[in-house]
Length: 338
Length: 301
Image 1: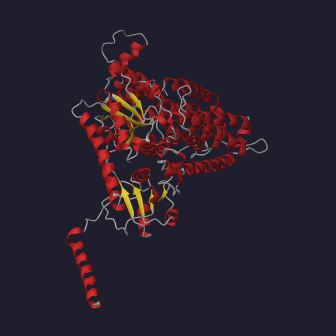
Image 2: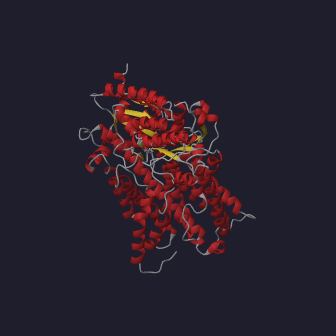
Image 3: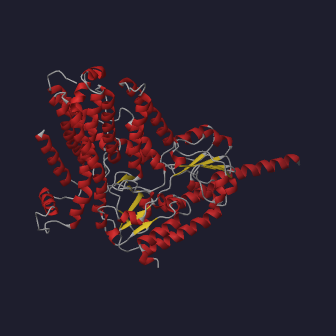
């Protein structure tokens, strides 16, 4: 766990130091020390370099870390709650809801900035949360929302919303919708413009992840099924709402600055399960840290490999994540405990 | 006597045909994709599938022959009341086009659109325009003039465009060439869509005496990161997304942009009517004039 925390910081420094404009790690360290008042000499670097580090790279790198941590944690929560190894943060409608919200926002010829967020990220955030709410309401019957109903409702609501998005795309010319804009949202890519965005998203993500610590034991209880969990003294329906709520909030936060980035939320929890075993008390924080490092690394490659062109980060998460996961799966000889 | 007359008539017909074959036969016309055009006489009912070709047809006084347009043709006003046949995406309505019984369709595309093949299989000749730069627009106007018999109108129009073009070119000749960033879409301000190499806008910047700061990109329209924009350090920024609500103030306030020369010098110019500049039709010369004034205000006082 300590190693993972070190990795986060190391990858963060690496990510901040690499880019089209060359800035050495030493200079960055000095700039950071200068920022917190421990280093007085500013002659070593140009103002442009400082602008690049503090206003362009750092917010984006931190954004990537937050998205990675949020998606991985949400993945653990949904996989544990739904007892489904194929569950990811998007499984109960968040992705389709976010895409629907984003596409609607792109139709409006407005340029609104609210706490650093444009209309598209705000609509994506609301769309993700809104669709989960609908899914939960549809699945709930007689005070209970069984897991099977929730998965089915999630699938149906997603299909419906995706169909609407496709319809909007078909009419894009008539509606003035820009196709390339929609596709770049669907493929995912970290987009942080203002520090304000970080100051909104960071507390939401970090507090949510810390809060999951208190439900880790109960998630372990869910592994014996809903009925079994009830026998263990867990208030199943209440816990379900809370876990679902936190997972959805994390996903919505991620979507608002990263679009639909796939693979991280599905694979990082499994990778950590292979290494650490299925106990959620370790799994949750480890996945958050590993997800943060992984996505910072993927984003670093996304923006540098083909520079000046940018590769959608969703392409890279699968491209480097899949071989990494296969390696883990083959290396770990013990039976996979879910 | 009758036989003699018949003989004369037949002889004269043969002669004229022979003469036509030997010296007067014009070279076959080809469209911008190099395809030989096979038309049955001068077209009388034309369908235009792009706003730019609609503008060319109306500017040549052929508006009365246009029987249908694509959904986006919005200029001149007379064109807006004509029947619409859909738009390129998802696809034009082939049935609507056929029902208008055109004897020529004017399409737009740098590679052969599949609906062109469909229309030609149905026996409707299609002219595909794919202009590169203002010179491409001039030759397109001449081509349409030749096809439709509006040769003198085309001559007048192309001469006027050519003169304005020569005027702009002579003015910007020898001046220092600034780096110009052309922003298509800044909805995501951290990596706006920028005009890349080979785009129509790229050629417009060059004609107006600038150098495209986005020409390092991979495609004609691409997302350039803030850091790469700061590195390219444009001296002039053209906002082609002004009509979508991106303002000069919002660009100045983007984090990191204050270090860019164009922002420091207040050289950010919104395009108030992008149809003038993005549309390769007759009005493109007006767009070029505006662009040249933005890039070289000192030359156009």
